[in-house]
Image 1 (cartoon, rainbow, N blue to C red):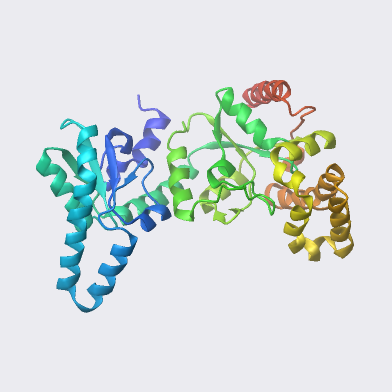
Image 2: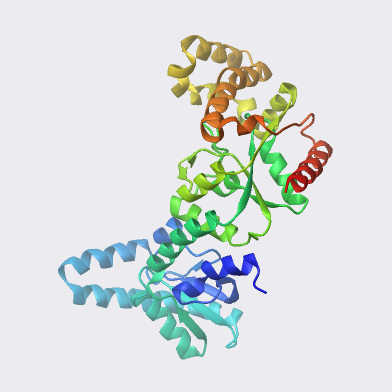
Length: 362
């Protein structure tokens, strides 16, 4: 009997682009320049560039006026770079290992690596169409998989513990899609993570598809309500639509717990409350000059707990109510849970109750 997971896996499998499962290779080599690799790459790939960024640019400039000269310089750079990288490579792998190599379109850079590795005796597959083919597969895969799962969407105001609840759901063996974790952002004006920049859109898409391919469509997937964008990153339209058509659970918590959570999750704002208020200045047309001045006064006096509460009550709570009502309608009022404590034991108990209630409904 074919399971739902097998059916979906067959729909979104690397064999659609002519290769095995990526994890089955001993090494996946991205032969493109470091700049291209940073923009996006196959999960788990290692960047072994045929030419570095400066060399790639030089070859490109030469190619516009003298193709022969460009190829001469490019091959010279390539042979030197491959020679530098191939000795440590050989020492870590055996002839029984199989490699996958790709470049931008599956052309010259891939062949340079593949030909040398095959000469040594390694089995090498080349991704036909290169990264361009892979990127098309990612976009199509996200559209397919986004519509393949049964979601349960956690709604609730900022600081109510939705993300912690997701993590506890995952710890207890439930399927979770943690979009903010993949996006490296907490999904609001204050959502930037210190020293942890967001990935590019393409790299986010790759990570999201890789995560979704691990999920079993025969089981529920828990996810946190999100707008169309998390920071600078766009959610796939099909995923956004699927979430908005799914059952929701409205989460809430006492204000004291929410303030405590903000202190723990945003320690940089607790240390620099004035910096936090400066980030909120774009809200002036929404909250008014007086409210913004009040927040700055609280920040200047170091009254952090009062500041956090005021920001939530005067901006985030009404804003969240409007957005969830617009996205999910009255369904956010149909089923709810108040988390009296956002500590480990309280979250563990809440998850057991949440899963049990969902099973009864299912």
